[in-house]
Amino acid sequence: MINYRSKINPTWCPGCHNFLVFSAVQAAFNALELKPSDLVINYDIGCVGNMADFFKTYGVHTLHGRAIAVAMGEKMINPNLTVCVFGGDGGTYGEGLNHLIAAARANINITVFVSNNFLYSLTTGQTSPTTPKGSRTKSTPLGNPSEPVNIVELLKAVNPHVFVKSVDAKNIAEVTKNFKEALEFKGFALVETLQECVAFGKQLKS
Ligand SMILES: Cc1ncc(C[n+]2csc(CCOP(=O)(O)OP(=O)(O)O)c2C)c(N)n1
Ligand code: SF4
Ligand SMILES: [Mg+2]
Image 1 (tube, rainbow, N blue to C red):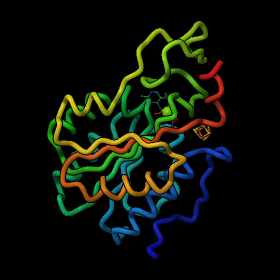
Image 2: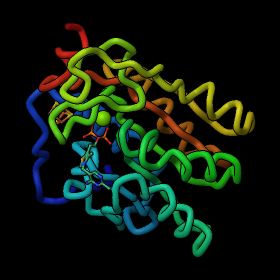
Image 3: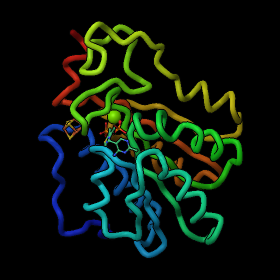
Image 4: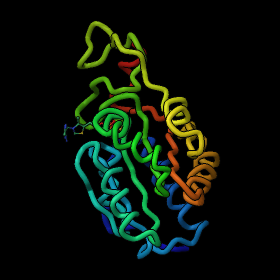
């Protein structure tokens, strides 16, 4: 077994689905025998971005919405590296959407993992681009007026040749399988894990 972990223990809320994602991605890295020295992980901001402290591969904790842009640059400079991104629905589909579309159009060989918890969670539960219409959140107390983005359909429309999947984070076997396939894919790959934020997710059902 290859050890990808730093000495820092995760600080997510007990029961956070990011623990599942964190464990599944290590299983996928191990299955592919990826060496930490050949891996560069780029992290967006947010709860998921805190993963930057918990891995000891090469990595960059980037700015909100900019992790994909940094990853594209790394891959162009050194195509031998395995280049990954971890981001949330806010950073990847909101602030970073233009970078996501550019990377999919270019079909650049990077792997993007999106923890989609339907909210801006680190900032305590504002609407994100995937928040269901009508949901009452901190930023939409009268109900979210916007349609949620469907990223699988959007990316398939942008470029039908990319690898894009949406899976339930609780189905750990399926998540691990898709993470592994995404890492092996020769081109742009994105796997979104559908998550419930245990701290702020309840408001989505009110
Ligand atoms: C440019 C910029 N705008 C706003 C923020 C404040 N901010 C920090 S985390 C966050 C929400 C992140 O939501 P998401 O990307 O879905 O990640 P999550 O916390 O849900 O995992 C925001 C708005 C920031 N750090 N940078
Ligand atoms: S606020 Fe939500 S997303 Fe953030 S660590 Fe807690 S449960 Fe996870
Ligand atoms: Mg989020």
